[in-house]
Length: 333
Image 1 (cartoon, rainbow, N blue to C red):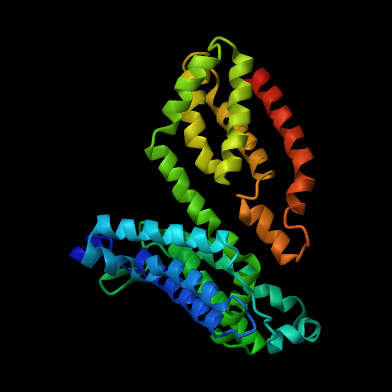
Image 2: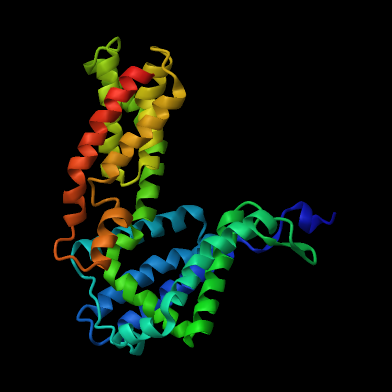
């Protein structure tokens, strides 16, 4: 086998995926600036331009400026994004496109065929993941061997756009315009999952779990199983509410409470412990605007007057499930 295949070189690698994302974001920024119906078009365009810089120019910046300076610049960009969003400087245009003004006629014409491009995304992704790993073109693999699912998802999305254009008679420009309409509806909440993922990494690097372990040792009797279980479950919910993602909260609470106290000291069964612990984190997901992709974006897409209405309806269920989780954990582990 040649050196390229030995190195796992691929035609569709992670960098190309980032470039594609960056191009789309820059196109959205350009269209936002050109939309005179948006009273905040300049700051809206600036927001999406800054967000796209890392995707499109990250490799160039690292090559020419080095990692330390590039990371500082990206940190400054994150602060600017927070400043623009926090100052309510993101706006939305009227989006009176031809497709937008004839939605009913459009739906009646194409019927359920409109769902086929969306259904094609998971189907193509799964199919390529199962069959496309070893596809080679010349000396290169077609798909990134280290990020196979992401590469398959990228191809599936491109296929879906092409298929949608074929059955509707639209163009890729129409797809970009509709993407901007959705981006305007979602606003800053669209980038929140990415930012929260970085926050989770910061907590892990800062060894927050060890700090929680020290605090628990100071204020809670380590021999009290019920107290430890309550703190673990409630802590998972609270950290998830802060970070917006139970997966980001899990390593912090596992290192701080689950492993040192419940597993090592009280010999808890790890399988139900971590499973119920994650479910407790999901209770926090139901109660926080930080989980924007679950709670804020649906409210925006449904054009609800109260953007927190989804959360308000979920809170009673979340609290009830959290109490059940504590009870189950006490008796099962």
